Image (cartoon, rainbow, N blue to C red; front, side, top):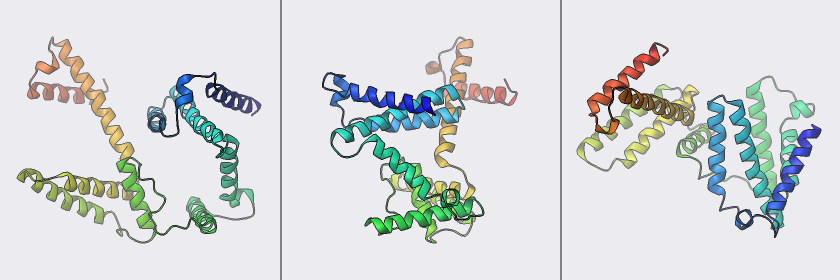
Length: 265
């Protein structure tokens, strides 16, 4: 614990030095908005490290993300808004306040009870702060990635009863939206809205099945990346250049890659 405090204080000191008048020109000219994109990228790099189950990489990426938190807090401190101490104090107090079954006398029987208690405490906090929600959908960041935004909207709506009774509802909706999308695509009509409706329905079914659509698509993307790189390797082994091969030839190599995977090679 002492080392953690020491290293965290060191990080704060480094950031203060970088932002000082005689510090780093690049760091000094940054604003909360200018490094917003990098903050999002670092968050996804943390997720990727978790998915890859690489502890060394995860340690590095968590450090990069922590840097952005300290960076934002330092800029806020310079503007007289809040400090990193305020950030840590606020989350400490929130965790204690929302876990009365740990830090006081409240009782809950299981994880479901914990979530219900958390939501009730959160709602009471909002009611007492003058920031009451006018809609069940208030508070969802509009800049979330599309799949995460869709899932968040659906979960919030479900909490107030706007939901299918079981997974058969969203599965039927997928079939309906897929037919509409295919019809529009085949007729050459505008398909963006229909495609969006189809993906939104798939996200809803994923929610019922307990599958994260974001992680599912990322896993499929990584699988495609791995397999196509193998296709390129096999092509080179045969003295061929992928860009000069036909689709049928590349597809045959793709199927070979799948066979090798099934054989554990």
